[in-house]
Amino acid sequence: MYAPELIRENKHFEQRGMNTSDEWIRRNTGIKRRHIASFAEATSDLATKAAEEALAMADLDPDKIGQIVVATATPDMIFPSTACKVQANLQAVHSGAFDLSAACSGSLYALAYTYGMHRAGMQDNSLVIGAETLSRIVDPDDRGTAILFGDGAGAVVVQNVQDAEPSHFLLKADGSKGDLLMLPAGGSRFPASKETIATGMHHVQMRGHDVFKEAVERMTEVSVELLQRAGMTNAQGEVDPRRINLVIPHQANQRIMDMVGRRLGIPKDKLFSNIEEYGNTSAASILIAMYDAYHQGRIHKDDTLLLVSFGGGFTYAAGIIQWHLEAPRLGFREKIAQRLRR
Image (tube, rainbow, N blue to C red):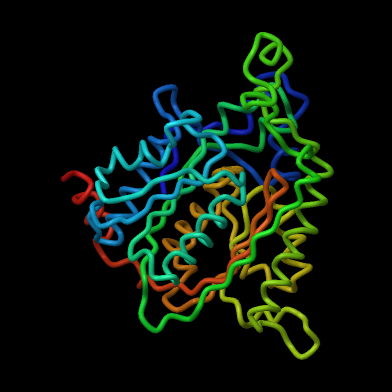
């Protein structure tokens, strides 16, 4: 993963004169700080740095990658895709590349697509990236959004593993609720103009209370349905938390995650959170959380993980995967640093 060096603490918003405080933000969201891309950094730059580390962890040369999928709501530009820029940066000369747009559910949608391609025998090595520069599309004076979002990227190499337990994915959407969370301008409906700029239509617009409610309902719903499909319930059809080693939800709001965990009957020690450090990084958040959980020793080889997300669209998704990486070895970070210096 990669998080920009610039850190924006909660006190930044107090200093801007917003009607908020560090204590209020922590209590209502769980966020303490977020990382912000520099003016010189675009989404493809963050994605490339995360991808380089993922390839180093997998000990895989870029020319062995068959496809690159970048999940993002903040591409460098409409086209060429951010994924094509990453492909060029990595010199992954044999790879196809495209962007996937599913907002905060993007990384799970991308993992599900990639898994299907591998199961169909159409790929051996894939690179899935979630990357965002959300600081570019929020109104810095809007308390409802500015305090929530940060920038970052997560990446994972997906490979075929012999005798692996099957993964399970469930992707859903409810387009009728698209107006709950959207970026109105910049597309064919409202192309950029003096009017769209003057009225703030190029900033994220969110109906926070409604999004909160829908997020809890939908994340719970999609998790239960997927767990039932995978046979991970008890005789009464209730979720059996003993079958799951760790739940990694989309990091949008600590209260949302806690409520989903309670509804699923998941003990708090099995619910991973790193929102206090990064805020909401949209499509990057689950992959960044997986990285942190792995390096904190919260994930072990053969563990079963439940991933669940929601996002603008309205999209929501869940995945059950088995972890195949061994624990980080001594000198692991040094090995990565040496590889990246080549």
